[in-house]
Image 1 (cartoon, rainbow, N blue to C red):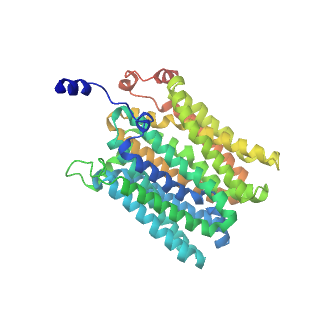
Image 2: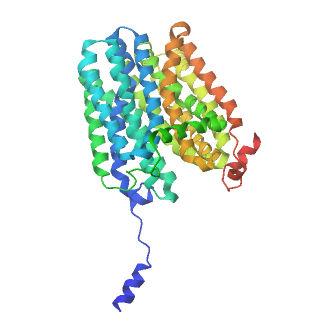
Image 3: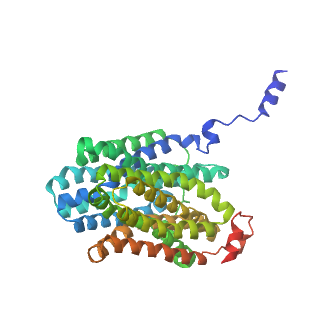
Length: 436
């Protein structure tokens, strides 16, 4: 009788926990918590680092150069993170990223800033740019390798929820509260402590969890892995085009962080706290819009959503973000609506991840690595455009350039066609591709 009861009870499927029903991999829960805290710490500076450095250096142009170098190292780090995670293991790459961030932030705050030395600030802040891509994208590889296939999309969705929830959303919100109380310099030290807390929570909480060690077959070297993650962009031009569209996605967002803080805080009179709340509004709108457009694109089509809601939406919203508050000065609620509009439009680019993985169905890992390269390059390209054109064209001219890039990206979407095998796989959004 006992045996029959045991065998009968074994046929009863366990009731999924709330965490499992939400799509979060239970074994990686501390990784997501740690990532959120880490990215909050990283994102605290996002709304004021440009004017802060300009004040210390006496030149917005020099600040833009330093931030451009930072964007370049973020780009390289985003590319290397996936390839190195394959051969070293995500755990080691995350630890390396945390270590880099801590060391160069301490040098930046304790040495370069007090000395107000341009070369030191550029070097330390620039090298720190390897930190967050190694930590964050190393964890993304861990998520991809350890999650159940049937819940992979949900797991990746939670990754980006934590990532963008910290940078810039909750990070800028925290800064808006601390900056008036303790100042920008002390706020940067506070962000370092929060980032360390998140990094330690993730690495300790993930200790012994599957997926954190070497993923590549024995014999594959780091150089081979790195080369494979780049050559696909040339052997498959659609992957290269997708990378360029991904750069356009957020390059203007990072470029805006160079000159909009001064415009909204000083010229329009909203103050630094008011600007930081706008950054929070943009990020919060983007987080929830990501979930919305993920569902909508499955119904309307990935290409349709990307072109009209993402590219065209961003072209219009960038112009609104700069020009409308100038035409209606003193109306903070107008600025809030424009920031939210831009945040929602940015989420219209969500289908680019789906398209990139389906364009090269047998090389999804390398395709996503190129996508990450584009995401990292955006942090470099945006500030670079500002550094090159701000003095000659002004803020309005740079904004028009950003809008034009979005229009070009929208035109380019027509060439992101899917291979016949992907079209025949029963994907919900394939019918939209027939219109191109």
